[in-house]
Image (cartoon, rainbow, N blue to C red):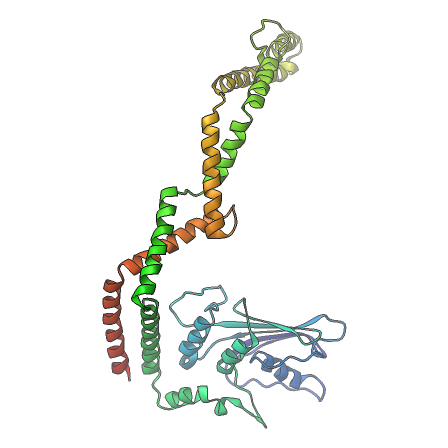
Length: 380
């Protein structure tokens, strides 16, 4: 049933929101108040055609949105329609859920000129898909609107409802969907032997190449950083020595370094603090700064001592970067697509495994199909 309807900038309607309860809801008003426009708006949620004059004067677009609670006897079928269309089963965006939808949110945006966009549970879809879904969510009845009764797709639902076979219908729906899934997996394993062999050989080559490369997540970023460091060894070494000398004087015993100057400042402020105790905190800060400067100088000295040029490692890193980028271009379409390449590698391995173990999987699927068919017969 329709729980909530909101219509914005629709013809003469500026912003109308309706919360509908169970049972009969009656809209009353004088002629020209816009009652028929509400019906027109609901028809758009059924996939009805949008005209260019729908948006209100001065507005760039009109919006119609609604919240539906599917009836129990149609939830399974509505769930099937949503799954086949790749649409979320609920407004939270759940696409792969096993249950049937308890709530469906439909939104239609009509722009000036008649073009429109359609959303179901927040996902963009087509008007034709909405028409298929809307026929299950809303039935318009008027002088010439008995659409549900003349729709062949609804005839079976009406007959099932008349027979009060809700549980049997739900059981058959679940069994039928399971059988369709098994049939699809069997089709994936089909094809002639030569085609399967050629595909397996191609997959084996790709998988072997990727396995030999042993790509790792984040490796491209780490390689780029290492290459930048190796290529700038001379610059890094010289800069570290200069900074170290400025901090602690380097190998000179002069008193022009930052450490020496901070030491002299600490002694002077300490002398002053004996006269004015308010300078105690400042004296401690200078002492701490001197200790930090000494530590930084020692760190830079050790860094510069360890920093040696390594042309062989640089060449190896260059080769590795080229390999990673080549595989990324091959499997992801761009040189920086390492994460996509790793995903593709898993997909190729899975497909190769399926072809390699095809006979065993075929036998298992055949057993599953036989069991599903038996369950379908039992559910009749």
